[in-house]
Length: 148
Image (cartoon, rainbow, N blue to C red):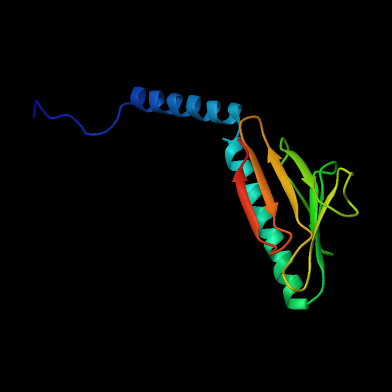
């Protein structure tokens, strides 16, 4: 059978494919994981909002004050007596709250048993995005807004 060719790939074709895959893998490894500042800020803001809402819920359930302490210098926060949580690196954090923490770099939002709070603001900023988290003193409502 004169016109019959064997089906399959040649050794040269296989080597070319492996070289292309090796180059692509090398580029991915050299660049590192894909990161987005916007996604980091959004995730940190969602986590902070969740922590504030958790503290409000705990205060109502226990009918006792629960504080959320934010320490921009340590780049961390804590809900009540819970574990210390860290903000992502590369994120600028600032906090403002009235009361004992006013005038310091740390901020504390205290939720009362009736759901109200001391109020406050937490800001998370990167190079291209700035998010402000506000806590209403009267209702304890937590809201998020783009600051830019």
